[in-house]
Image (cartoon, helix red, strand yellow):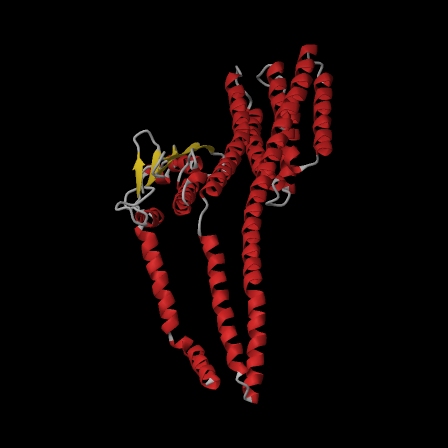
Length: 453
């Protein structure tokens, strides 16, 4: 495993190539974590800036305080985000520990004034503790409760500074900076958590919408099959029942009824094939509109240049529609694109078409990676129409997929794919006429002719 795959660079690369909501969550989460790191840095700078020696009874509790408070800050922020997003319970023990360490720190700093540092230095350190206090609390407590706790802490700390008979500017600085810092950090934490929750809800709504679209398509397909086959199957059942009764009575009309059953069954088979064929064929204009909507929903800027998709023959539209569908799927699954361009050009006279899909999110080639079968299937589909498909990984980090389909195949005849399809259809039709399954129908026709004679 290389460093880029398993170390910090690999972690950064995985975040960069993840989806937009995941990246937003990670960036926001670690931004809030950085506030705890900044607090630790400020307290460490404060310790280094003090002149003169400190008594041991002051230094040891002070260092323990300056380690415990940022640690509680970080742990409560981490647990508070999970609670706010609804993935974990409320961390009551961490809330109590964070509030207790903050109160103990402010009280210790005010009590130890004059133990080797200036009065303003002690007030500044206690101010920083109060500034960061409401941030994590607003992720786990209601706004009014967290605001009341913060206001009480600032008021008690200000009263303590006033009782110590410090200069008036120290009191003003302490209260003013504590209030402004508390408002800033409280708003930042609460707003960040709310935004993360909204993004999560939007992502869940998008997934639900996709599932509903699939369910709706299944219902529509089932409804179409029911409309096509339901009535015919009912008629087949009734006529078969009637034929049985007529056959039991020895009536020659039973043959006519079974012949009609056979005709309805073949008609139902033809209608069912038309329904399935309509679902398998891809409409080019519909695929272009769908690709733009899906890519933009994924945060990818999609530009489409359509110069006459509606004027192409149906067979070309279907083939190029599959190219758009497969190309869009590849962009969403394998690329980290910021933009995607789809250009369709059609020939002025012969009806030839060229479709180019290009995006800037091509991943670096990996050793031992095998290509998928999607592009190979598209090449086979286009080859049946005399077309070609080319993919190109360019040096500027873009990927280009180009599909070219002639309006008429070489030789002037019908496309080889359609000719083969018609030949297969004719052969299947002849085979159905000669299969043993049709023997009962032929036998009934012969019996009917003998009865007539």
